[in-house]
Structures are given as C-alpha cells and as structure tokens.
Length: 321
Image (cartoon, rainbow, N blue to C red; front, side):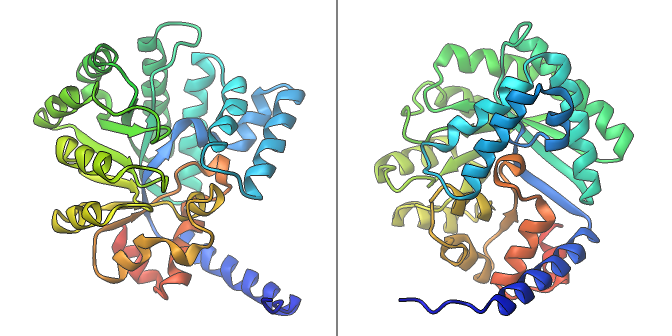
C-alpha cells in the first residue's frame, strides 16, 4: 500500500506549482498542437450556450478530469459542438480563443480542425475559421496558423476536396495537414497520395501516432514511411522500429502530457516517453492538445514539464524557439 502524502505537503506542492505557472506566463510561448473543437474558452461557451447545454458540457468536463478511456474521450467533444453550431459562432469563438491564448502570453499558435457543414458548406466553415484567425490576430497581436485535419478513414475523394480548399486559402494561414481522430479506425489508404502531393507543395504534415497500445506496429511503420511526417503527435505507444525511425529522422514530438494522463495513455505524468526523449536532446514541442477538454493551458503544461524534468524557466524558454 502506498503511503499517503501529508495534506500540508500536498498544499505546498500546489502552491509551488502555481508559482511556476505564473513564471511560465511571463515568457512568450508557441502552441503547436491544439484542436479547435477542444479549445473553445469555457467563458465563451457559457456566454453563447443555453443553460442545459452548458451544464451538460461541464458535467462531461468533470468526468474527463477524473479520467476516461481513449475511446470515450471523443464523445466529450460533442457537447461543445452542440453549443458552437453555426459558422458565426465559430468565427467569434476563434477570436475568443486568440484572446485567451494572448492572455497566456502565447505569441504563435497552430490550430487544427476538420471541415464541417454547419449552416453552410465546408468552405463556408473554413472561411469562418480563417476570418476569426484574421480578426483575433490583429486584435490580440498573436500569429495564428491552421492545419486541416483528416482521418485515417477519409476517402481519396474527401482528401482531394480538403487539399483543393487548402490550396485556395493557403495565403490566408493554412500551413498543413493533421492526421488525427481515433487511431484504430481506418488504414489511411485514402489519404496517402494527397499527403504526398501536399508535402511536395510545401505543406507541413503532423501525424497523431502512438495514442493507443492497440495500434499495430506494421501500420505505424507504414504510415511513417508513406506519410513522412514533419511532426508526431503524442508518440506514447510506439513500437521499437517506429521509435527508431523518429529518432533517426529527428522528428519533433508534440508532447501533450495532461491529455495523455487523462485519457489513460499513461497512468502518471512521469511515464510519458517524450520526457526521456527530451532528456536525450531529441526535439520536443510542449502543447496542450485540447485545453477546454483537459483543463490545462500552455503555461500549465510548461510548468508540469519543468517540474518533471527539473528544467528552469530559461530551459523552457529555449524550447519555445
């Protein structure tokens, strides 16, 4: 049986952590892994949602804070989507997100989203996101970029449609593509050709990989070799050959430590393999994943990494360059 930590010691640890968070808020930061649907500021959702929908969202967030399974986490996003259900709300929500990021001293942020049909076509949704980015960037002095998300189950036709829109709006802040959602659904066959063409045209490719221990090693290697991603999201459950591929190619890993714990990828923070990569000098970018869902913004994530790896504020600042 594990010995209980005295209450006084726990309180002291909490106070020290909050002090560290405040120090992290003083440094300029860059956010590289943030899904729009899981990043709406809670105060914005309270402002635009009706009471019953907002209460349901808060109940779902409380459940997540206590820990949920990898498969169950995807249902939590539906409560936020029910509130942000028009393109106009999306636009204003992106502006609100820019404000919240600026308050955390984030000076550069990449957000990710799949294309949706709310009260218009997918192109209308994309324009709403981009317009929110433009307004928020100017108003809050933050540089915003966008990655369009596709899934492993996306068909070749769907992927082509997304790619065509990305090319049309490339000069408005679209910099690449994100392969995400449930890593156990689909074999990515429909997106390989599009991603290869996108890479040739200079788009960045970020691949979620190693989210589930049920991912097959052969599929991980296939995706790495065919997609040749510029960055890896999470990278928790990677087979040995995938780990070797990432190390040899010096592929940065997007470390989202709070989400990894709260969806059960790992049991505690110290188990995240990216922490060891960081110690070994491998490129790591600290990110939040979904700050609404997991209740942690970038300053808090930076503070946690600093605590676990015994890093100074200056060390964290150097990682942000």
